[in-house]
Length: 117
Image (tube, rainbow, N blue to C red; front, side):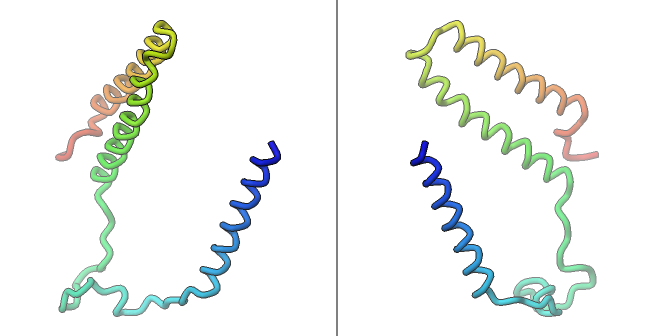
């Protein structure tokens, strides 16, 4: 237990020291006209140079991340199939897949997966 505590303390101290050094040596920037203009464009914009993302694009990106993380959870479950109890493994896998299917059904019924409105 002492090794874990010491490791956490060392990691915290190193992180804090790095943050302090970075904040001390970082150059403070001022937002001026040049920094707010589009990068290497060559003309003055009529609108703001920084346009927000579409909310629909953001939702699709979040869904992709959720289902991408799902694969990283399922792969170790397949590897542990041989060394675990088949009933508990099957029950865990079934519950996990059912939660994902219910989430997908909910998103589908609320039209979260539609690009055009």
